[in-house]
Image (cartoon, rainbow, N blue to C red; front, top):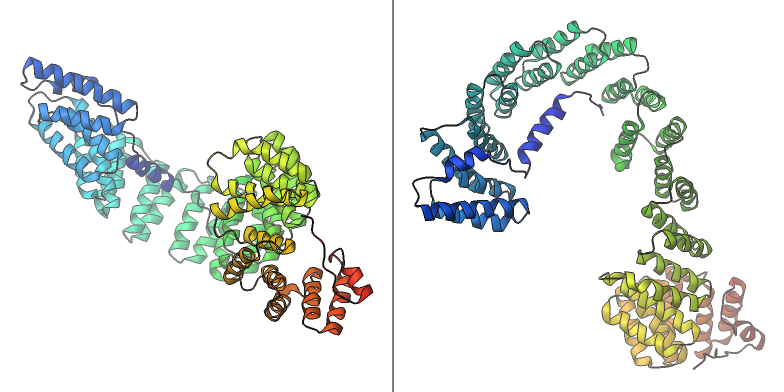
Length: 594
């Protein structure tokens, strides 16, 4: 990658950006008055003037459709009003209706040309027409209009510069050079013009002429390193690596601390296939204290956006990140970059530490707070989620996601009433966020169930399933709680069956379905699903292994059942009656409050 410092592209970009702008130049007042009268009756003149002024008001207020209607009515009164055509064309241009804009401006200019009372303010009509033609890629026609503007106002150098760029876009290279030469005659040797001419000569496949243009700049100021960079890039584009190298080397002789040239050298060596030498220069560029952090960060982001297309491996990327941190220790963006890098490496714990460092310097960034809390949630560090969401809610009280995350932590920490309280506090900030409304109802269901508020819990679960029929977590938990209580087992089987059908490899969902079938005394089918759950990743889950033992016991395989209960006991986290099962060597049903 070459970080070019060439100004040409910036200038061209700005010009064409202005061409694409939806801003419409205001037609000069003198023209408005001149065109409004066109052999109309006094009554028509008054109506025209009223509609025209009202149209300008509506345009200023941003009510473009109303303005279009008003200027269209002006043209109904006076079909030859150039000024109404101009305003209407501007509105069509803003709405990207380039065909209508072009037709109106062409007609307006034709009317003006035939008018015996011409005024130089009519140049605005041509200005807009040039912009429309550029957008339509009608560069030859745009060049003709610019030539007219230049002939009308030969001292306006901007016309010549735009004319050169427009001829270039039309691939009329000789005309482009002629325009730039005329401009150069008026301004003298000029970096901006020379770079533009170099671009034309390159496109025209006249490399010697392109080189000559940059050499003129060098002769005018031999100590300006940027000119040698332009020449080096030009030689590199032409495949002349020896001359490219010589000119990059010249930059270092003039300006040894020039960080940009090290990027160019790196690109040079990458192209030659010498990655080792290339990386040496990238390291020097990143270590340069003269080079701004933004340039380095831009390069880093390009190289890490797609690891497969990066020039550097993970170790080299980490090296660059460490150099960047050492060189710009006070730039807190380094913390977020380290965090992103570590997340990609699967190192959430270390990534979270860097996000905490960022928040020590700036607590106003909600995105960083949210990312850090999500990492804690992924790490199952619910104490941190609980503490950090409380702090974040004080800073961002209108962010409903913080209340949801806090309630999750409360539920995990057995603070179930507090979970309900925080959800109630966050409800006014839900607004139209349907996804977050579903989450709130789900967490209400969980908290209420754990508090023994079964009716409210099941009502909330029903609400979630109604709002989101594909919320598999809600359906799974709802089915499991119903099965534990032995209630509405038909509904539990229907809910759990749908979940398993859509998620056939999820061990938790398979376990729930097995348990619902167990409660329905369909032990053989329950065995099939619990074995599927264990085979798909549930082999170290105490609850699943205990359930397997319960199913085996009911199928008469008592010795295997006891063995599974003992395994579950060793794993820990089984039911409250697991130890008693092992001790008494029999199945004991766990009592659930009603």
